[in-house]
Image 1 (cartoon, one colour):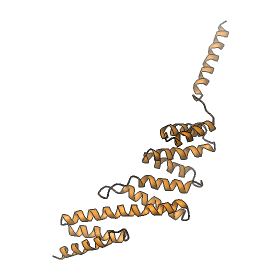
Image 2 (image 1 turned 30 degrees about the horizontal axis):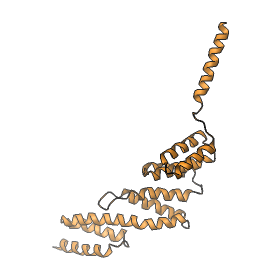
Image 3 (image 1 turned 90 degrees about the vertical axis):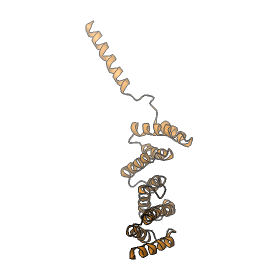
Image 4 (image 1 turned 90 degrees about the horizontal axis):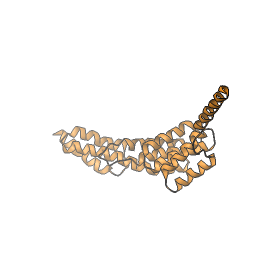
Amino acid sequence: MKRILTIAIISLLVFSSCAWLEPKEEKSIQELASSGMNEFKKENYKTSIEYFEKLRDWYPFSKYAILAELKIADSYYKLKEYEEAVSAYEEFVNLHPRNEAIAYVIYQIGLSYFEQIDTVDRDQTTAQKALDTFKKLIKQFPENAYANRARVKLKKCLKSLSGHEFYVGFFYYKNKHYKAALSRFEAVLTNYPDVGIHHKTLQYIALCKEYIKE
């Protein structure tokens, strides 16, 4: 009797343990992929991430896992959670450097930085990172359609960076630090010669030089 009771208890523990280890609400790969895409199309991006994370974690060696990784990054981008988006896109590049979507992914990294570009009086780190990423894309995939899109975005990056340089130069100029101002204005001409403030920059360079002579 004791032996039968012991076997019954052990069996109960084993089956309970197995049930605990099984994923709740187990769904097929196709169901998770379909649900994730449907939620993405309906702009329910947080829910979409949940489905795609389950797909990626439950079926990591499936061909759908690559789709899941990409759509997780896209969902973060759509949510304007740009740091998470960049992290997810960069992880995709590291895991799948030869994937056919790489040009798109690099463009999206650049775009995630681009969307964070602030006014010229603020820090321009994201503008510089966007510029560097778009240049990388153009160099790596010069004939790709996303490279053409990146070329258009480059102009705003350069305009923002040059505007910041001019803003700092003008700040020094107003405070009569003419040598510091001159250095900034000359940097505008050297680094950003074709962004629309060339003539105005030359005027302030001339003024700075006049004040320095005195």
